[in-house]
Length: 253
Image (cartoon, rainbow, N blue to C red; front, side):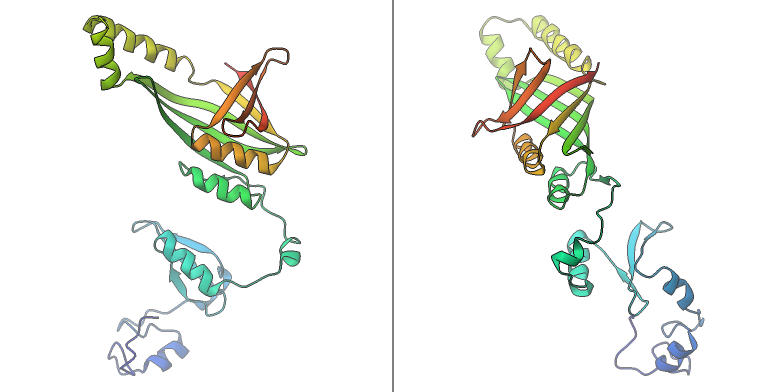
């Protein structure tokens, strides 16, 4: 709790640390601030955010009713390893997984890690890819859900831009394109990109393994889409193995 291990009375107020803890007063401060063990007990196991400071996270240990600073993600993980309780797979299966979506913000690895445990999530997925001198950047909002026995991935395009890279620009200039034409071409590309903002689509997958494969391959730009005109949808597969993963359809323009 931060008291001086070499002193019986850390704050030097004439009352030993042990007696102050029994009385419920703060052994580290002369102002004798009372600890509220009732508050700690009522909120044991919870995580609090210190909103009047910088949003620091504190976990209330149900065993000793003390608060522990979670710090960085590595610190929080170490704390969970130290204080977590072991459980068998059979007993863990008796506890339902939450149906609330985990917000992964922009962390694509968070999405796949959560899905490995069958935890659904949402994420702002950023795509950046260069194709023949053209840099394509886009942000899409993605939400995972269950659709009967299948998994569904709802996607909405939130923003995007298309720019000509310096290498692409020099290549076009060498081929006779003027500076004015380059500007017009860039404007044309970006106009096309903005037209996709707000477009919604839904991809469905038969198994968790398939949606996991899709997300991992998408992160590495290794997903192949093949239009299926007969069914008005796009089949998605792995560029590496050709394995069919799922189907996507545009739901709203």
